[in-house]
Amino acid sequence: MTDLPMHPEPPASPPVPSLVVLGRFQPFHHGHALLIKAAEEWRRLNAPELPLIITIGSSNRPESMENPWSPEERITMLNMWLDAEGIGDVGIVAVPDIEDPPNWVVHAERYHGVAGVFFTSDMPSAELYESAGWPVVMSSLEQRDSFEGWRVRETARMLSTVDDEEAVRSVLSHSIPLVVVEHLISCNALRRLAFLGEGGEPVG
Image 1 (spheres, rainbow, N blue to C red):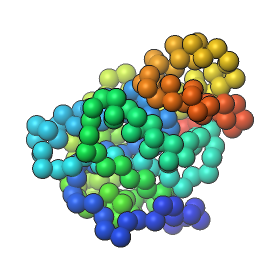
Image 2 (image 1 turned 90 degrees about the vertical axis):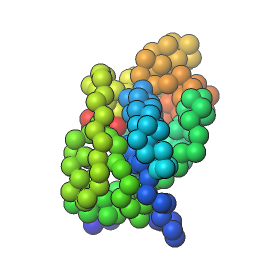
Image 3 (image 1 turned 135 degrees about the vertical axis):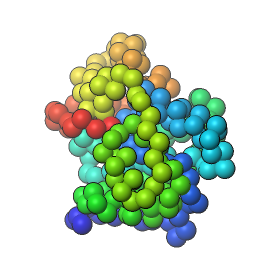
């Protein structure tokens, strides 16, 4: 296990089995958007009885360049994009890290519910859920390298001290949905990146 705080606590009653999409969403970018759209389309065609649940990982990590935005901020990004896309009836849950991959799924089930279907484009995550007995649907993600979270964060960091909002908007909208870019600008959520150091890891 880990010394990280278990924040948030799991709900008293986990959700019903669902179609689960997992990400860190640091920040929410076009790769995430494509994945969620693909998941919703698959759900409508193959399992309309399953609700869609978006699971936000690393909810208990301290602020850093790897994790600059809180789970609450990431939920706001997701909700703004979902509203703009007209995608409704989506559950969003935040799950703390435990630094114990073999036990991750059992831990996460306390938050997103037991085996429904796991939808992903990430092979290591697929293997974890398959090992735990979940049906897994793999989605191909075009331009995956372009949408790696660390690349998006590094671009945002380089723009964090730029005062020309139109320039920031123009550059970031190539990797982040415009509605999310507008939110990050309006609430000054980019400026902090200038003070969080450099680098990151190639995960979302």
